[in-house]
Length: 601
Image 1 (cartoon, one colour):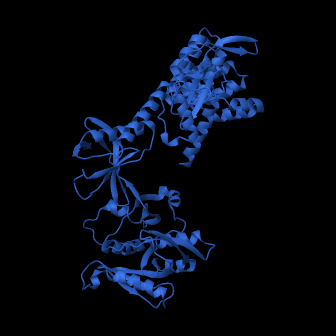
Image 2 (cartoon, rainbow, N blue to C red):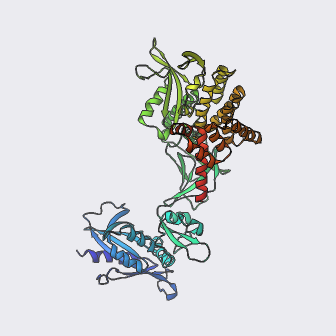
Image 3 (cartoon, helix red, strand yellow):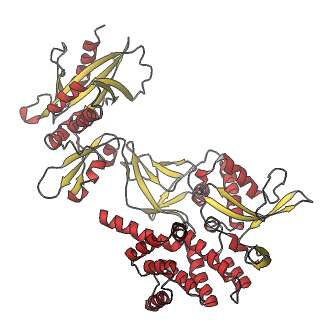
């Protein structure tokens, strides 16, 4: 068995049958590196003329003996090539490299279209190797698809010869010179433009991206795109009956097929993209996304089962005989998720629950939350922290209050933010128990809970601390709340309400200068600092010239960052560490980061 002759004969046979191609391949393999050419014509006519000639494509053919080509669906292989050959192909502008798998009965052809960008990348990547493996894809056999492989090569070869820049071979490289780029370009070539659907073509073949420089200069190749997924930007509504389920559905193309992406879980796979009959579709469901997203998707599917009219972008699309494989499973899942949503709402959770992020440990915690009377025997909870229980489940954090019902053997669980308890704190400095707000024990982490209720917090603080009672502890709590606000959590608006209203109330109660500065730093964050506030800040600075902490804080508020940095530098190490833990220091850090980003731009 002569492997190389069988391989080249297999290529010749396939090329010879193509109406647009003509093989010029050497069976004797006497030419080093190359095995010949494939000639490409722009017509199917048997009597081809010179004016029909589009170009020639150099080819290399390698045979590879295998025991059995058992998998007819084999689409990708790896084959070892020589770096020296790659260098020679580069000087010639590229090559289409064929690998023919051969067993006792049949052959299967794979190829890689290696253009200057691909070859330069390979040579650079495998600089210290003489040989290396690269991927080869199954060669299409249909007339147009096979001819397009060669036509694409010719067109991209023209664009890449003489335009390749060795230092710009990847998208990351082009980003370094993005200010010098006018536009980006890509295209595909086809021997039969009539009936060609661009999105289908671009998602079933490789294509190249080119960057057109400003001024004079040819487009620079910088990326080869494979397995593209194209999202069409036009968004539209999807409704069933009077209810709209999706406001921003869009069409997506992948592997030559189009579908309407409705949500995280639902796609409508269009069966016939050449017809105006959009009613030819099947539905694909993969339960993904958050609790609210999955419930919306499930309600949509349920509505499809119960009606026979879908409205896409305002157009009615009648359909019939829609069936879901397992209706009972669908309705059971809806019921389960509705119960979970009700339970989370009962505990005051506002953040949408990410069901995709749930772990096995989270399943146990969810079971605890869903149980109205969680068993003390099953759920052994450490209630050392005055009954405060923090649960982190997937993307949410919940703060609860737990009490033991020893007589009946279960825990009473409530949201920490929805109920008011009389709480006494032991003050070591005065050796006394003092009633204060239950919320003062919360630090930044506790305030980032997804069931936070700012109004309840403020009500409780006012109830326990009006008349300037133990106001210093409320001020410490405010600083923790500001730190939480600076985290930009999903509860940003709740935390904004908290720091805005609490800081105002706190200053009105105390009239202390240091508390006004905390009110001022809140206003600074919210963009509400006015001339009156600035004047008062300056007056406080004059009255506290010897207080280095106040002076540093004032410098930050007045945007005198260099003065602030010098004052912080002059602090002793203990005071410096303390000051840098204050939220006002975050304003200085933030301004430094913004300046750095601006300078980079």
